[in-house]
Each structure stands twice: as C-alpha cells, then as structure tokens.
Amino acid sequence: MKKDSSICFRASRELHHALIAISRQERRSLSSTINIILADYLKERPATNEAVREKRQYPREALSVPAVIDQPDVAQPGIVTIADVSLGGLKISIPRTQENRPAIDAEGARFHAVFHLPSSHFQIRLACESRYALDMADRTCVGAVFVDGNFQSYRTLQSFLV
Image 1 (cartoon, rainbow, N blue to C red):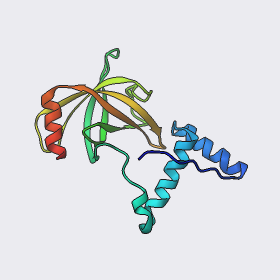
Image 2 (cartoon, rainbow, N blue to C red):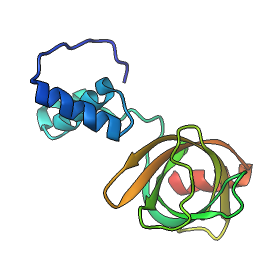
Image 3 (cartoon, rainbow, N blue to C red):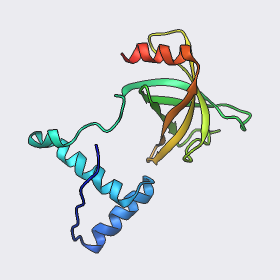
C-alpha cells in the first residue's frame, strides 16, 4: 500500500518513549511501528477492513517444518523451523535456548535454507537474505527473501503454494 499521507498528533512523553522502545526492540522505525499498530487496530473493526490490505506481493502459507541453514563462512549448519513461506521468502523461527544458533538475524545476512515441504520428498534449497529479525521471549523470528535458487526448488515451492 502506497504511503502518501502524513498524520501528526500529540502524545504523552510516556507513550512516546514506549513506542520508541517497541521500535528498537522490533528493529523498525517509529513511523513503521505506529503504522503497524494502527493497521492492526483497524483490522479488528469490520467497517474499516477495506482500508487495510496485505502489503506483501505474495501471500504466505503457514508451515512448521524443520530446515537446515547453511552459511558460507560457518562450518556447522544450523537447524531452525520454517514458520511460513511465500514465493518471495520465508519466516524462520529460532528457539532462544538452542545451542549453535545460526547467525542469520542481522539484516543482509546471506544463507541457504534447505527443507522439505509436507507434500513433497524433493529437497528444496534456496539462497536467502535476512530482511528483519524480531526478538521474542522464547524465540527469534527472521524474515528473509529469496535471492537465488535452483529452478526445480522454486517450481516445487510454487506448486505447493498455488
């Protein structure tokens, strides 16, 4: 959705500081954080659902499949869970308690995700790049986009999603 309007409003110092803290925790700008909060609020109101549309180019499919993360400069691969996938990328969940956590939570980190879809025995291997990381109480969620992959992997993913 194109952002072509500005909204200015006054807020208490406490609210402002709380929003800044959330922004830092989620590694987002203050403007982006406020936009997400307002969009989530509007989604709960049936009369205004028209105003809030999906921003992603490709719809996501929720999953819970294990994956191996191969990083070019790391000898030992990491094990993660793919939480959702689309034709554009995936969301990875990494438990906080996991030993040998893959270092993919920095923006721009490059890695290969290797996994199997529930309906296929074909191994999918796609090159990815981290776009964001969200630290939660029990896990870190990493959003990544596909930057390269073999044709058969992408085609299998496309068949699964369509």
